[in-house]
Image (tube, rainbow, N blue to C red; front, side):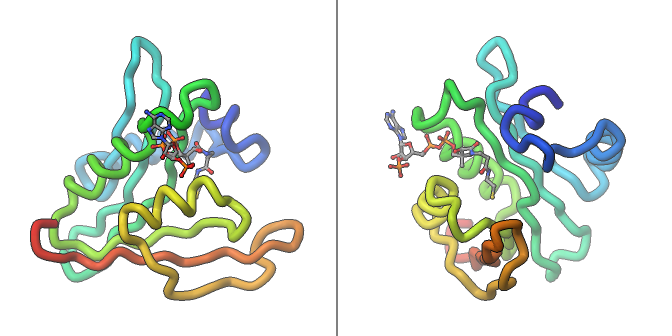
Length: 135
Ligand SMILES: CC(C)(COP(=O)(O)OP(=O)(O)OC[C@H]1O[C@@H](n2cnc3c(N)ncnc32)[C@H](O)[C@@H]1OP(=O)(O)O)[C@@H](O)C(=O)NCCC(=O)NCCS
């Protein structure tokens, strides 16, 4: 929660939201953590039990002091490896260049856009990664 608050400010998830996420681990949630003695990053997936339904990558963050060292890429790679054969969707603010580069490297492509979704106003981009051989 402390790291989430540091990374997302007023958009951080509440304690109740985090409790709900962890309650659903093993049901339809997957939480992966980068542990360097302290939690320095995490990624959360919503994994519907129906295999045809897309997986949603709902959250990813790395501690500011640890960014640009490959942790975000490692978390994303591990998360994608955990859901082989599944389509993965996520949403990202158009101006979030760092996250967009990370997703582009993984092969995500834009499939839709929600105009003015974020304050600013700023568009939200919906990105998709289709399953391919080997994933
Ligand atoms: C998006 C986010 C998770 C990326 O995490 P990260 O750990 O910095 O990502 P990585 O280090 O794996 O890769 C990012 C960059 O580091 C570079 N990098 C990777 N390993 C590196 C290394 N050993 N040395 C130097 N740079 C490296 C990558 O090339 C990449 O560079 P680029 O920004 O020029 O493209 C992080 O910026 C973050 O937490 N942002 C705030 C929360 C957020 O916006 N989440 C996404 C919401 S949709």
